[in-house]
Length: 367
Image: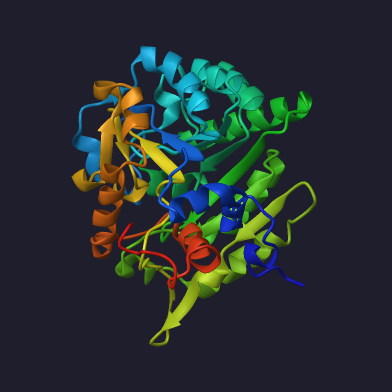
């Protein structure tokens, strides 16, 4: 049977069901007794070498470029381990981690302190040394490709066409090194459905398979309705069908077509809005300039900031975590949900609501 989306097989790396592995920490949220976050999204740099049209952080481009000071590269990994954090994700909320000169050292220290590592990256600026560190110390890496040819890649990312080839070379080097050394790193070629590149989905899947990628993920982008209208959903379906034909045990295609809906006769992409936010104590975000924020999607909002670990020190995070001050901040965020344009952790919130939160026993005013 043709797979219509990864949720038909819920046991996969892109499914929100993995939040159930954190049941003890979810119960702590429900009880108002927060445990440390499972994951910290740690931005190492503020500034990016790409100019992606669809980047939700594009308004930050005018800010001065900065990077996490080297002393925190040395101290943060042990702090996270001692606090009880399980993993670190470099997601590029303010810039690509590849631009920090101490990335290899950071990965080595996080691994030493038994923290799982995940990376989302444009993949351009990696040296072979850093790629080998990624292979040796990381659990997964997702390359934000969003295109299957040079021309489309250049349009959606705002970079010269030869960047496409350079990133593919980096991915192939990483895949070959990983295979040669029998390492467990999971490598993904990630493809957002965009007006300038959706017609290259199948070609992207073929390229990904040929260079040794394990996972190929296709998903909707957060776009204005006017841009969504430029996407031929029927052609997207055809492209995804062709990509699924490449599935093997070693190469897996994941699509999210259950988010395609029809409104007034026009195919569009579903956008979920939360009525209540539960998930922020599970995944904390630290910006390159030191802000510790509750919600990654509200990274630029002052009402979202707990403290600043660079200015206030790392111990301040433990002091404020789970305090009435923290609870009040989350309550204030819940009162402003109408300002949320998207929800990265909508799936987590739904699962928490359906499996853990019971309105007849829960004081919703607490959060």
